[in-house]
Structure formats: structure tokens, C-alpha cells
Length: 320
Image (cartoon, rainbow, N blue to C red; front, top):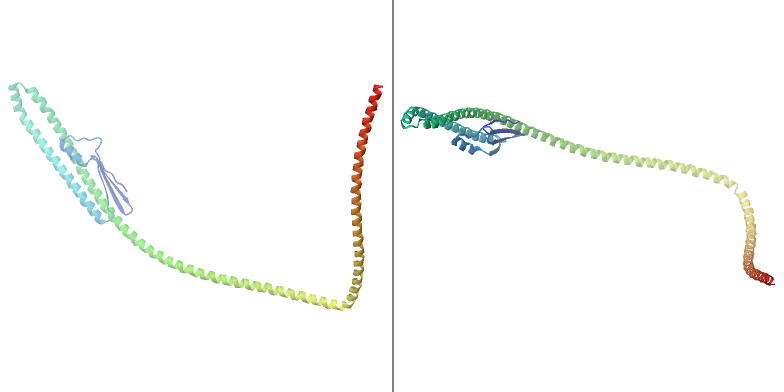
């Protein structure tokens, strides 16, 4: 919330933020007004370019601000009284000047200075009237400002009371919600512990279920193995009936195996002999290749000799 009022260079702004009230009073000279007298000049010098910030979060600072505001109001009243005295003094001076004007006129007519006295008196009366009018206007505006400030002060007090009440309610609400929060926190912690216990129990149940499932599967596997063993035992019983025949067959197979081993030994001997023959053949073949290569080289030499001999014969024939 903010309020502003500006008269004669005074600007008052009130800001309410949370539980604090901030009042910023900045006094600057107005653009449309200038002091006409020395008294006004000195009065304005007191308040020019001054600023203050007041914040009152509780009743003590509110009362302090009210006292300060009362002092400002009294100072304004004193300035108004001084202005009124100045107006009265100026008015009396104007009346005295009016009464002295005829005698001065008569004296001036005698001394021959009527025109000069009249020129000095007329502008003085006009300036005094203008100054009086401005002082009256300033006094009226000052009274209006005082009333506005009183209204704003009352508004500030009411706002501060409402804010204080709201602050107390907020504090009580915060305490209540704080208790509720602590209660909910305890309940949450209790429920969390309960959940942890239940999860631990569920884990135990799951582990027990897994163990039971593993035992059931193992039992099924054992049953299958027992059935397999029984089938194998039955096969052995059937095979035991044909064991004598199998023994005879085994003896026959052993004889055949011995014969096969003998034949295999003979074949291995033959293979070794053939390998030796192959190696000898390869050796002879390599020797023949070398002899053939040597023969080819000799033949090439002979052919070259014949070719040279033929060329020589051709030359001889050409010469003959």
C-alpha cells in the first residue's frame, strides 16, 4: 500500500511490507514555488534535500513515530504562526505607509520631490500585498497538509493495529501448524518404521517362498532321476538275460579284432615301404631334373655355337 501527498516540496510515501510499515519522507523544493522573503528562504533551507526512513514493526515504534509526527506538526504550527505574524507586521507596515503618504506628499510638494517618493511607495505596497496573498495561500495549504498528515497518521495507526493483529494471528497459526507438522512428522516416522518392518517381513516371506520353490523343484528332479534309474535297472535286467550270448559275440568280435590288428600291422608295413619308395622316387626325380637342366644348358650352348658357326659360314660364302 502506498500513499503520496505533495505540497510545497513535501512528499510522504507509506509502504506496508509484511509485518513492517515503512514511511519515506522526502522533502524537495517544488518547481512552481520559490521563496519571496528571507524568512521563507531560511525555512526552506531547513527542509531542503532531507530524507528519512521510519519503519515500525510494533506498537513501541508506532508510538515513537506518532510523537515525532506531533513534533513535526507543532513545528508546522509554529511556522504558520510566524507567517501570520509576518503577515500582520506587513499589514501594519502597509497601513503606516498609507497614513504617512499624505504628509510625505505635502512635504514633497514643498521640497519639490513628490514624484520620487510616489515611485518608491507604490511598488512597496504592491509587493507586500502579493507577499501577503502568497503567505495566506501557503498558510491554507499548510493547514490542509496538517489535516492530511493527521488523517494519514490515523490511517497508519489503524493499519499498524490491523497488521499487529494479523501478525499475532499469523504467529498463532504458525505455532499451530508447527505443532501439526511435528505431529505429522512423528506419525510419518512411526509409519516409516512400520513400513520397514513390514518390508523386512515380506523379504523373509519371499526368501522362504523361494526356498520352498527350490525344494519342490529338487524333489521333482529326484523323482525324475528315480524313474530314470528304475528304467535303467529294468534295461540291465533285460540285458542280463542276453549276457551269455553277448559273451560269445564278444569273443568272436575279439578274434576279428585281433585279425584286423594283424592286417593293420601288415598294411602299416606296406605303407612305410611305399613311403620309402616314394621318397627314393622323389630323390631320383630331383636328380633327373638336375641332369636334364644341365643337359639343356649344354644343348643351349651347342645351339649357340652352331648358330655362330652358321653365321661364319654365311660370311665366308658372301666373301667367296
